Image 1 (cartoon, rainbow, N blue to C red):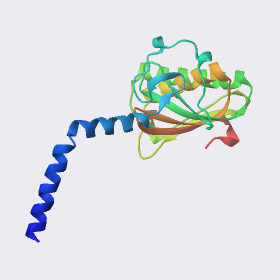
Image 2 (image 1 turned 180 degrees about the vertical axis):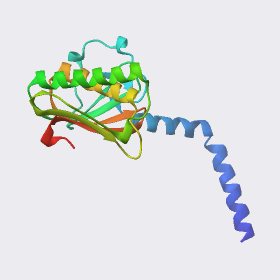
Image 3 (image 1 turned 60 degrees about the vertical axis):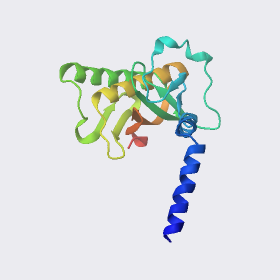
Length: 190
C-alpha cells in the first residue's frame, strides 16, 4: 500500500511538471468569461460591472438577444442591472408617469435620508389607470434605496427606448440578485 502511495505521488508530480499552472488558469478564465452575461444596452459591458453610457451610441443600433423573452439592461454609471420580461403593452403615459413617480420618490428619499435597506423589504407605489410598481427582497438579500433607484432608472431607460408596458423584472447589484418586481395593473402585482 505504501509503495502505491509513493508511485501515485511521483505520477502526479510528473503531470504537474507537464501541465504548468499558467495554462490551467488561462483555460479557467476563458471558460468563466464565455459564461458572462452582457448588457443588451452595452454589448461590451459585462453585467455587474460599471456601465459608462458615454462609451455607447444610440440603442436603436443594438439587437436584442435571440431565443429568449428576457432582456438584461444595465443602469448607467452603476453596477446595477435588471433582467426583465415584458408581459403586455399598455398605455405608455400611465407606465411612464408611474416610473417617473417611483424614481422621484426614491431620489427624494436618498436626498433627504440617504441610502440604506428598504424597510420591510417591500417597495410599492401606485399610479394612474390602476397601475402599480412593486419590488421585494429576493434570495435572502436586501434591496437598498440606491440600488432600487438605479434599477428603476434602468427600467425607465429600457422602456423609453423600446416601448412601455407591464413587466416582471429581477434586480441585481453586481452579480447578486437582491430584488424581484413587477410593474402592471394592481391585479398582476404581487
